[in-house]
Length: 204
Image (cartoon, rainbow, N blue to C red; front, side, top):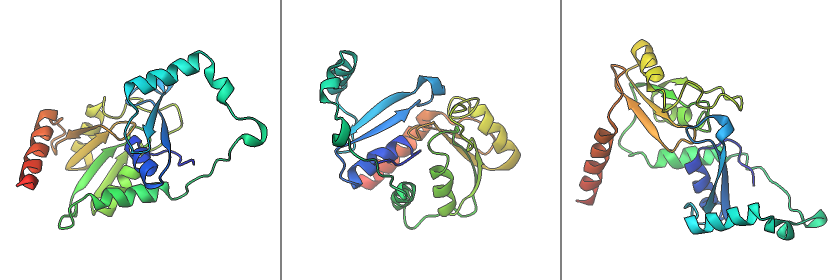
């Protein structure tokens, strides 16, 4: 099953929701496009254990896979899941508290010309924010090219010009850097503290 460009966590979600045996992502993470790698998820949506990844690498480099590769009529067919992005957007919105919205916020979101270029702006807009998207014109070679989580000054400059707050997800959509309304990068320790306090409140 093919889903097209989708953030790495989205592949984990689709793998479990479609009851697939595994999920595979071609990803450069926050690196240049020519450093693409492969991430494999098990049927439970978690990355494979290191020992299993090493075994797969050994099989690839030793050509042991040739004997396992199907041929002719045994080769399967690929089917595209046309609504994969929509499914993931709905899932993400359902993780947001029902009593809250993003109404009244202008948010700059830098998608690094990566897999989150459609999902991130859509989710924020449907939650009520006015979104200023940048890094949403991927061409296969401009991923993380002067944008994304390694270049918070880009989104910071845009914030000072156009908005009040921002976030900059990495190419995979599985990391984030926040910039405040003044265009200054927010220390990641502050974000962890906020999340930790929220978890404690939920735990009672």
